Amino acid sequence: MSLSRRDFLKQSLGTSALVSASASVPCFLARTAAAAQTQPPQDDTILIVVQLAGGNDGLNTVVPFRDDLYAKNRPTLRLSAEKLHKLDGDFGFHPQMPGFYKLYQEGLLGVLHGVGYPNPNQDHPHAMRVWQSADLRPDASQTGWLGRAVDQIYQPEAARVPAVYVGQIPRPFAMNAERAIVPWVRSLDQYGLQGDDGQVPPETPHAEASSPDRAPFQQKTAGSSPAHDLLPFVQRVALAARATSRQVEAATKAPAGDYPRFQFAATLRTIVQLIRAHLGIRIFYAELGGDEPGGFDTHAGQALNHGALLEQLSESIAAMVHDLKRDRLLDRVLLMTFSEFGRTVAENGRRGTDHGSAQPLFVVGGKVRGGLIGQHPRLDDLESNGQRAHTDFRRVYATLLDEWLKIDSRPVLGSRFSPVAFLKT
Image 1 (tube, rainbow, N blue to C red):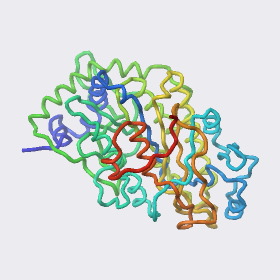
Image 2 (cartoon, one colour):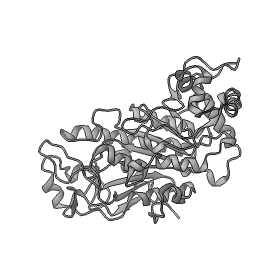
Image 3 (tube, one colour):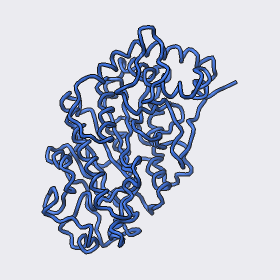
Image 4 (tube, one colour):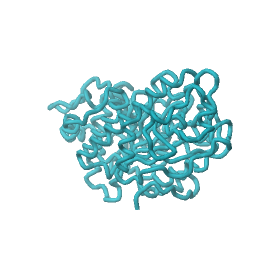
């Protein structure tokens, strides 16, 4: 009888808790560390994707303070020019984003104006599925765009784990793969390393090898493998974990940068620990706002909540960049943010905004071409009461795949998309 790898591991090791907690962190880290020793030079780049859950208000993130229509449409939410971190004579960052402003000044942060897709859908699940599947007909997709990218570089014989989701909530649809297993890690600070006897500790609550996806995006990992092929796999994983535990432990105990006291900052710190351990993981995924009521979905009382989230985003990423720079790792790393949609240009009468369309994306890294990239969408040419997109988000994905990760984008995206010039040549 043929079993899926996930089901087999559950049966072989006794309980799903044992698989998701005890074995995963030592095992997958050990396997990917061994594979990293023979990693080709072109596979040296790393991508971190950050989801801003709920629909970020781009207009109050990158503020067009000189546009009269901005002030007219936002009588209570308008941010005055003197409070902003000025990027040039027309735009400024939200007052609670000094970290982003510093990265911008250093040429390490690019702002991609007006990103979206044609005929946008303003329903949260549908819009998020579009962005995470990279398919405008998302119900037809069973895998996420990053999952399909992982499948291209996944090599079971090398026991390599190319991607990891790091966060406090279930794994996103974007990481669903057909063949590869994408682990879910919560924290490395307290996970139990194997003892001298080589036994896996009975409980390690901070990591999971896989998990059900968050509703309504539930989708089991496809693929199956005969049980007799998986038994040696489990044995190799268990032995490799002990050999690699000291390497991972050293990375978690290495002096870290000065991170703010946010959960999102702790997530990025975990990612940096995994990068510093040189395990060969090439794709990381994290989320901000998904574990907070409403997240970026600021329909009412937006000013306070939105500012607090932007502060977490700005200061946490700035701390991560400083940490990577210290170890001379920043040139290998590129971080991109996205949200399911922007917000309406006009506020809604409840001191909030509703679901819009186009949004700014941020790219951060040592090889990023910093600055404002693309034209800011006009505020008098709207689509679904939001800004009209002029840059298809799949062009951004194609650039990340083809030019940064060196993974062919066409099998991932289903077509060829022209790149966006946000990388240094």
